[in-house]
Length: 299
Image (cartoon, rainbow, N blue to C red; front, side, top):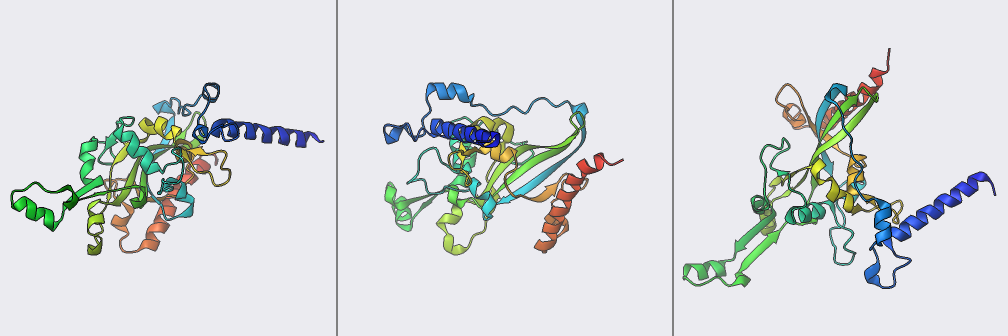
């Protein structure tokens, strides 16, 4: 056996050992033990998100802020959308929206804002109007007008779930680190976009009230996103964390705004009613950012 084959065999065995230890499928004695790690495995994994490290402001040679749309209809973005039906799968698999909502409800994520500039903080009660819609039927209204208590069966409740999310919006910061001589990206915020819960109650009206539900300060949510796993279609034994998926930019986004002298106006504000030209403008901005690093090494 050649040295190359030996190395490959050892690598495969290490992957197999890591997968069985992580998911505990091969060693589980009951179905309830699947997905649970032993204390030794938890200590071995050192399960913490990779720290960003400190970057001195003097080392930032150039920077630009961009806002992007992540369309969930695109196949490459499916890991951020699915699963939307969680009845027949384990509790370890949830969509990105479910992960964030659960963390907001239990207090694991505190930095939730109304806009991408993080100026107005939001609480779970503030988000209620967009996430939940309560409606009373005609029979319930008649009971209320008659002075009677409204029967619960006449109250309809509509809640947004993962299947209602149409896209994600992210705000990121591109910068040149002159100490390391490379172009880097730091995600600052992430936001789910969907029609408000009211649209589910009146589907026949064709309401199109797509709004930004809330903005999450991404650095403050990294621990939660690191503990949640996204589906890895290439190797199901090695799921990828949402933190790694987003930080490594394993998604396709379209830039819809960048910081500029016109008050950070969006692409649609100066290229209207032409989707093709808006996409070309987004690609132009991307290419301009990529060329910054290349131009730095040209003499």
